[in-house]
Amino acid sequence: NAGVTQTPKFQVLKTGQSMTLQCAQDMNHNSMYWYRQDPGMGLRLIYYSASEGTTDKGEVPNGYNVSRLNKREFSLRLESAAPSQTSVYFCASSEFEKQETQYFGPGTRLLVL
Amino acid sequence: GENVEQHPSTLSVQEGDSAVIKCTYSDSASNYFPWYKQELGKGPQLIIDIRSNVGEKKDQRIAVTLNKTAKHFSLHITETQPEDSAVYFCAASNPSAGGTASKLTFGTGTRLQVTL
Image (cartoon, rainbow over all chains, first blue to last red; front, side, top):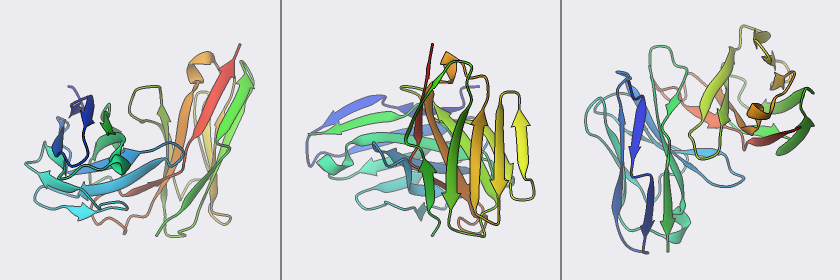
């Protein structure tokens, strides 16, 4: 039982390049989330998916798109990366009926030059 | 929307002493308050949580208290050990804010250092 896994662990992009961050969970959770973490700002919600087939914007969605591929997988795409998107990105999942604990992946560290 | 403030941003204590981290929230409808611990290079991990129908909860050396009237909650770590050194985040959740998803608003984190 791996929990929440994220790929890649680290990525360097040039301004304007695109990339997709992958996330998968094996806990049969219904809800999944993408956060970014910046120094002094805690974790900020980018997008979330309450259940398979639905996605909603969080606090900081601009410049990102998401896809809930199936119940297990939730990807985050940067279409045209900007230096302001340099951050650590975390994926999380939760069991929606309990509306509680979110389980986090190990994170993807992204550097945009 | 919800706003969570967390203090202090850094905290240094000697091994064996207690550590207290405080958070305030703005949305009176929030009813779930978890605390996460993040070690260097890892994702946040839940260490304890409390719901609005409870005033205090303990788990070994860790306790959380909630004052709904004042809209603040605190994390208490007793008999601190070097392995308690990490960044701690509080969060608050309003059950109606995210539909069926547990939409959390996080504080900005407290870096706890336990010195020998």
